[in-house]
Image (cartoon, rainbow, N blue to C red; front, side, top):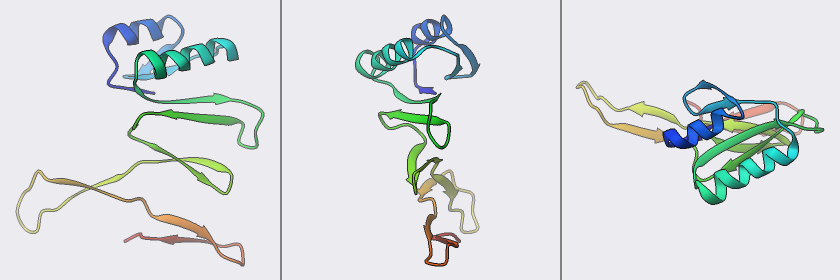
Length: 121
């Protein structure tokens, strides 16, 4: 997923992958090409980006992140999750265009193995 990419960058990506949604590319490429592509995204294009690819891990994939993408990679007991800030509108009886970002509830595992959620409303 590439955020705020130029048409030429999207065009270059479309040579290797299919753009399934604006900025979201899907492809089956080898590790060498994948790493060179990631270097280009990070070092030359300086884009906010996420890359997910399959590998031999417990989850079956790895998530790479660069810049300040819309979603944050969170490690939860060795499992990689994606977190997206919740946007709320404060109206207080009248219409408002103000949008505020709030944090995503945090989770902890208790001693008895149950997952507890904190910070939710």
